[in-house]
Amino acid sequence: MQHNVLILDFGSQYTQLIARRVRELNIFCEIFPYNNFPSDLSSYKAVILGGSPFSVRGEDAPHPDLSQIRGKLPMLAVCYGAQYLSHFSGGEVAASNTREYGRANLSYIKENEVFFEGVSPNSQVWMSHSDSIKALPTNGVKLASTHDVEFAAYKIEGETTYAIQYHPEVYHSTEGKQMLENFLVKIAHVPQNFTPGAFVEEIVAEMKEKIGNDKVVLGLSGGVDSTVAAVLLHKAIGKNLYCIFVNNGLLRKNEFQSVLDQYEGMGLNVKGVDASQRFYDALAGVSDPELKRKAIGNAFIEVFDDESHQIEDVTWLAQGTIYPDVIESVSVKGPSATIKSHHNVGGLPDYMKLKIVEPLRMLFKDEVRRVGATLGIDPELLGRHPFPGPGLSIRILGDITLEKVQILQDVDKVFIDGLKSWGLYDKVWQAGAILLPVNSVGVMGDERTYEKVVALRAVESTDGMTADWVHLPYDFLMKVSNDIINKVKGVNRVVYDISSKPPATIEWE
Figure 1: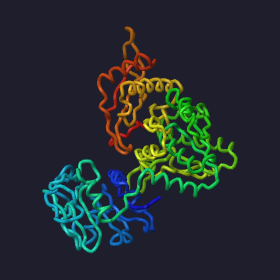
Figure 2: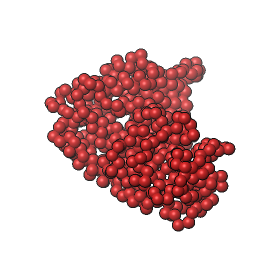
Figure 3: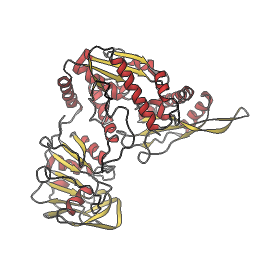
């Protein structure tokens, strides 16, 4: 994979947004922890230092080793990075009288600076820090100010080093993307060659070289990620790809057969395996969401181990892991904390001798869809909402029983079918229903009921890293609520989740 831009993560929740903005410029980038990045930087064209919840004045402040970067590669330091360069290079950082958080406007921009080409006077930026730079580092030159922050941006003479105290990656920095483009393209001269077509060409060649004539087994789920991974691998190794679609008993209603039908005619070698009871047994009595994920992950591995033994000389296990899975499952001192584990991240047990191949590991979800379109995959399949690997198990709060699964499958079908019939499905990133571990009092036909409560969830997003709840029409919510209560036995109350990510996650577990 091309290694054009290195982003160092100091724990900011905005770090992933920096990567998104850089990718939108058709520039490939990677995020690494500040204390664990590649020693060989010869293939990188530029480095970006991200923000951090830490203060550079604190004893626990992250200290990156910039000896192979500063003065050798173009570098953009954002927020914490800008303060770090100042504080440890002859400048001064002090606590602000008030926390500088939210919208601000540039009141001064140095003339004839490439970094600010095409940027409007008084351009809005987004601040998020409690410290502020009071004196520039050695050889620092002020490039921009706001009404409250004198050194909002600076550069260091004699180096291709730029620093800003605001966040250009967030939506509220209205011309932040232009500033990133100015730095990466006009200053650092990074090529804008990361396109879906280029990715397909490069990853297919890489897979051919990596796998050779070996056999690969891939778990298909019917979702976008595993499907695109399968088509990419099929393009690279053809008949040596063996696809397995496992019914874990936690799929949507009738999904097992409908997905198998969907793959028919795509040229993929797909085998359906009904392992529902195996998963129910593994989940018996388990309520903790992390233990559910681990139980399901282990059961998947066991199924694949059994099936792979039926394929002579299989060497590799392919997975549809994507970049947010990787980011959310990595935790080191400093960078973003682990939010949840993912069943397809983290390797295989010693007894399973298959090597892992992950062709989509470096892509965000929207990029996966664009790659799929380049490969000619059916738009209806590419437009499917994401569905969690652990399936409905993490949408059933508490322990798993067949009765609960069947209730939730029926509720989910009413909700999803309703979105489609009202023309709302394609306007939603992801939707589903959650079965809550509480009963509620109700009245049906003059009789008192004490039945289950379900929550409906619908969010809009670009890549799943952040998400807002969708303002579904009240008439639709009223109709779908009535349909669920009237058609699904065991449910007498429906609520709608209006939480965004962050602070909530898309799934409840």
